[in-house]
Image (cartoon, rainbow, N blue to C red; front, top):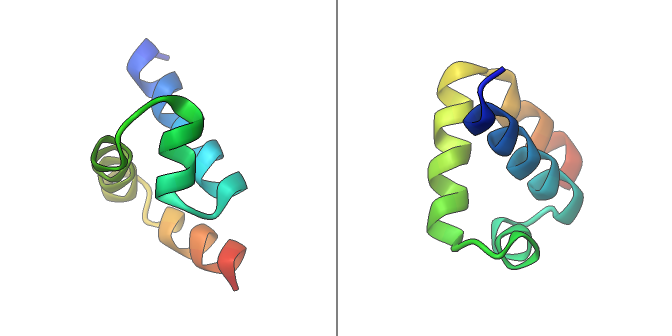
Length: 58
């Protein structure tokens, strides 16, 4: 697995744990915009991500 993919998965985990792009970004030392970009690319690759995040917050 490429390093970028591992970092993307770490971003996904942080978003799921924090239930917030902004909080995940702060925790990872990234911008909220960077988190959003990564999550959009993951969502394009794996349609289930939006469902998982919706379930987590609900």
